[in-house]
Length: 170
Image (cartoon, rainbow, N blue to C red; front, side):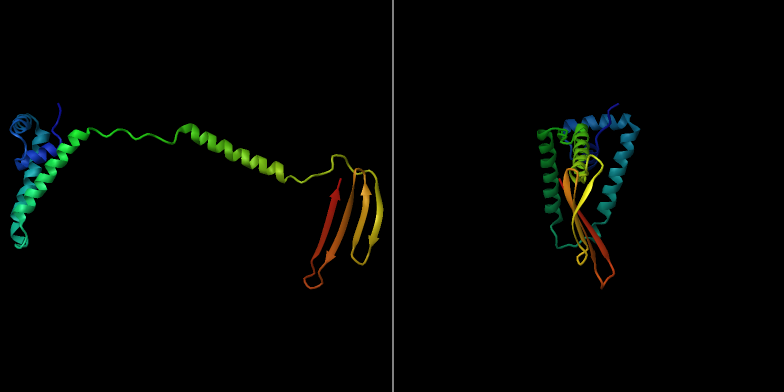
């Protein structure tokens, strides 16, 4: 059984349905207990609202305001019928986008490790020749197979830190 919508029940309870819609709603409410309960709830709310009129300020044109609101509701309902049901929004994010994003991050991390990997000699040093030494600066330079090197030790007497710098060139 198709139930009446909340909008139709609200309009039926306030007497704002057309003659044919009111007749159809009346037939349905007589045979459907769920819709009859909803209709009673709408009528109770309307009755409570009507009984609180004494508490409202008198300097407002309530009749004019009610007529304007009723007209706006009808316009909105008709506009909704013309526009039809809302279409499902187009999904921009697809599941394979997550896979592509993850693969991109992995590629960036791997390339970062490859690029920043320090160069090391491919063969162990078997022969080293001392070219020069300067004890004053703590510098030693020499030649090794396939290149040359410079090692310098620096000592900071203020902090007590010792730094060793080794430069290897092929």
